[in-house]
Amino acid sequence: MRDKKVGFVAMTAEDKAADNIPKIGIGMIGQAFMGKAHSNAWKKMPYIFWPPAAIPELVTICGVNEEALKESARRYGYKRYSTNWKDLINDDEIGIIDNGTPNYLHAEPSIEAAKAGKHIICEKPLARDAKEAKEMRDAVKKAGVKNICCFNYRVVPAVVLAKNLIMDEKLGKIFHFRARYLQEWITDPEFPIMWRLKKELCGSGALGDLGSHIIDLGRFLCGEIKSVMATTATFIKERYNVQTKTKEKVDVDDAIASVVEFENGAIGTIEASRFCPGRKNYNTIEINAENGSIWWDLENMNNLWVFWRGEEPIETQGFHCINVTESYHPYYDKWWPHGHIIGWENTFVHIVYNMIEAVMKNKPLEPYIATFEDGYRNNVICDAIAESSETGKKVLCKFN
Ligand SMILES: NC(=O)c1ccc[n+]([C@@H]2O[C@H](COP(=O)([O-])OP(=O)(O)OC[C@H]3O[C@@H](n4cnc5c(N)ncnc54)[C@H](O)[C@@H]3O)[C@@H](O)[C@H]2O)c1
Image (cartoon, rainbow, N blue to C red; front, side):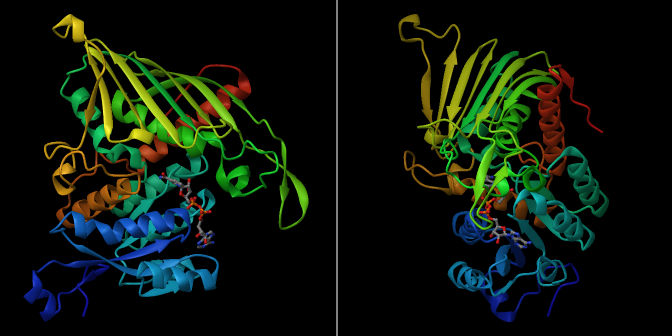
């Protein structure tokens, strides 16, 4: 028996006897890196955030390889699997579509899911360009469904603490935002071509992959970006295709560096590259403001470094490291005793927790969670960075 609302399972007598927590069906598109990370989050969320507003029920996982899918369904605990994402859209048992596919497959399933009245989490970058992202933003707005663009670094407790310090005006006027997101994995010229290196499939290279994350952190913490001036580079212009056994053109950026201006007068720098030997997943941000500075890096994600101007005594003034694991810190009351740190995968637990809260209690996701509106604006900024690199000119970010 089903409720009238799509994807909600009516309570069985057994549920009622248990504790009256409803269930909501999840359809996961993508079964690889993000499919695994998101499935883990759906499973773990009620375990940590007990009692949840609804218990996610893993209904169907979708991908391209049937054998691997069968294995994933068994491993992660989905009732069904499918090689056709439309099966998930047409399934009344599914209330939330979670899209962890390559960038070229973000738009169509998200738009169709919105039309079917399903809530949506879509991986970043929201789309390959701002035009495609706008169609997605408009579709969820029209359908009135809850929507998240999975900029998961917003929900790291230390980053939320930084956000709260800024919102509480503890830092005062912001002067600088400085961000770098660096990885090393395509430095080797023998690394083969893949969807992340073909514009038609991904939209852009390091820009949309890594740059979009730090653009989001800049917007989240410092406000809207007004203009950009950037350079991009493609260091290795051809790569081997293991299937066709031929060389193919790399038509996306390998690295970007951009100066950005914020609407509030702050200026910033954004650098993203996948050509940084030794850098594994080095995502770091620094903010300098009237009353002090803060910095954070993902590889030590539980720590927030803070410097307060004028702190007494002057002899011990300096950056302090706050281990953001106290029960009074964001999200941490649900986790472990202080000092028992959490890891990267749990950012997705926070993302799905927020989605369930929003759906079940009709809570707004803004300003702490990135929505499709944020995803669209992020794509506008990415496009402006690409345009600036091409023209050599400063480009204004125009949102509509
Ligand atoms: N938020 C983050 O920290 C983060 C990290 C990594 C990747 N991502 C984003 O997640 C998305 C996926 O990245 P990934 O690394 O998991 O990619 P991946 O290549 O590892 O996996 C892509 C998955 O999509 C599935 N897929 C491809 N075509 C399909 C189709 N037509 N129908 C159904 N399924 C299809 C594949 O079977 C595969 O399971 C990208 O947009 C990427 O930018 C986000």
